[in-house]
Image (cartoon, rainbow, N blue to C red; front, side):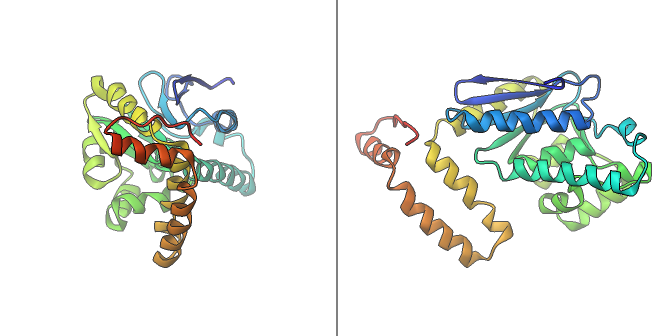
Length: 257
């Protein structure tokens, strides 16, 4: 892979966007990210992904220079659909993906971060969708995901002005889970990733299937699915181990089965 690198630390995959200076999301990065997801999917030991950017930024946006190589409206629409499909894959992935954000997460970079399940940001990071400043609009589902987190009024303001908010503001609006000092970003992110990865694999998978129901389905469909998954996890050895460990007042030794 030319634009991404990744390694496994215990049950956590550390994925790094490596396309200096801005880590702009080119077609190549999108392809590499798709390949990483393929590789992670094959590794049954991995239970959490941390996604971060190398250098000064998480990702300062899409690769604007690449746009000049397109000739037709269909070319742009095709790129949009590819990005949307990839980000949908991330949002629907079977294990949690944590975006660890510093510097800037703008345009396509923020759209990628919003597709992740958790966002940890530095307090002075810049997050926004500045596409209208260029006479264009978000294309990787930014117009649809941003209102989920900040509400419609703030989404209108952010997109129509093109002005970013700080990481601290992002946490206040619900766009980020935590805003931390830059020197604490890696520690806080990895600590949270380790907590996620310490849980039973089948339980994680069930939760990753269940939580989207809160946005995409009726309450009754969601609770019906929850009852179904509740029954399934009790058929796993990990459920028996977890309950016995609670009774014994010890830490459970999950085998992910």
